[in-house]
Image 1 (cartoon, rainbow, N blue to C red):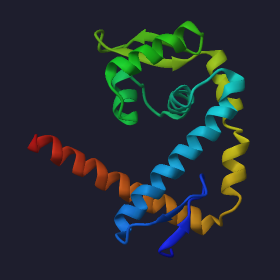
Image 2: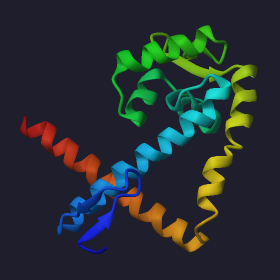
Image 3: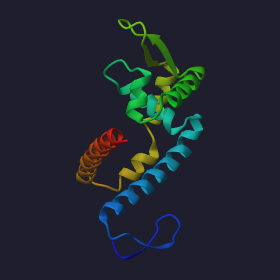
Length: 165
């Protein structure tokens, strides 16, 4: 990366920090924001948010019973926000809530038929496949390894910082 680079979104000349950790942080934020914008546009035709689609994907692919707290933890969102989102999804006929078969004080989430149908539609997200077509399987595999390792490091730092506060 050169000292002076053209910003990919606004075409503004910008002197990038020399510190590569900051560069990674900036590029991750820019990339995440742009991906969310693209996904928001694509999901709009189903009247879904990125959060709704993530919950649908989690529920469809889960190998175990999923509770609202599991969604909150996995998505790093507050319980209240997740509860409000799940309420809207239930009102829209995408999910159901049932009592846990063994732990009566817990709720288990599942997709309705409408939720499963939407999963099949959002799984076809053309934008993600179009973007990923620019990369080899090796590049994608290496990126996944890096991102998972980065996620673990961030989670660990977050837990350590929470203890210090």
